[in-house]
Length: 430
Image 1 (spheres, rainbow, N blue to C red):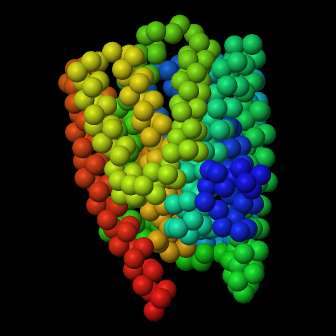
Image 2 (image 1 turned 45 degrees about the horizontal axis):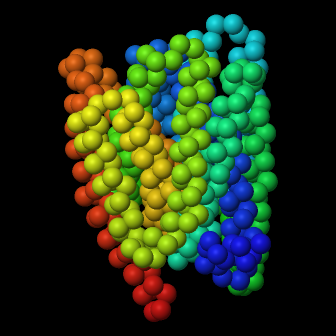
Image 3 (image 1 turned 120 degrees about the horizontal axis):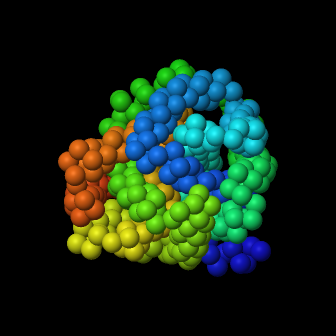
């Protein structure tokens, strides 16, 4: 096994167990989520396309309410306590939704609540995972290993949509929920192995176990203060904000097309699952065989800016040729780029901040800021398409402009991260 891994990743002695456990955690988590995502997208259509921007705002305010709770958990409890609580909470929610769908015939209200819940769920579980990764691994290890670990998302993303695609029609969309809950619970088992590995590494280096896994302390609102006071964290927050604007315009255009093309809920679920499957398949190849090599050949800054450049070109293409096939293709490129390149690079940005910022500020940015971008961009999209009558071509040019701003910010963040890494290295030598 080690020999096979060394063909894909440059490993140092003792790193393989943490690498595989991290991969398995993300695999189970993402299989769980991507099984739910086609269901969420279908529920978004069935609840009314005109209501989707309101659902994004609902998600934003739920995030605002949950962020202090998460800050309190991380301040008062060690990871071995608050991470199981986060994952256990969402697992129980899935089972509760399943029972609710079975007991109530009119699914309109449930569909809207479920859409908001899944949008909260996916960001919280992914954000807590990558906070752990940024804490467990150094920046140098992130460059070697994050691409492979991120492949766990694409591998799980192949399983989740495949199950949804083939079981949505015979079993029914709702019956996918308990399967998803079981996978989410399993991901927690592997996450604990990662934590135990880090604790063992610390003990071997002379660090006490309680110091490795201590509560972070500080205020439950510390994340807001950390982001506001740090130009670097503010830059990352703006980067994530632009990611959501670029993504949401494409997502809402796709929902509008799908609502016109497919007649039933199960057909829509199967379409979304099929797209998810191929996106994850391509992402998996890129993560396993491309990310680490590109990181070595072109460097972090070029990789961070590559997807924004691709999206600028992709939006321009859609503006010139505003048809469904081009839209699906550009959206697929965006998602592959997000999973294979942007997400690992974005999480590497946090390897040069403090441990408290890795859990608190990072969670705030990955959840609250992310959904704030969703909500504002969805409202702007609705205003453009309904009040101003903007068509697909106009949306394409608007997206190209936002993507161009994203390019400029990515370049600035790449330089800032490299300066932070150099300063940390100097401090260590001193």
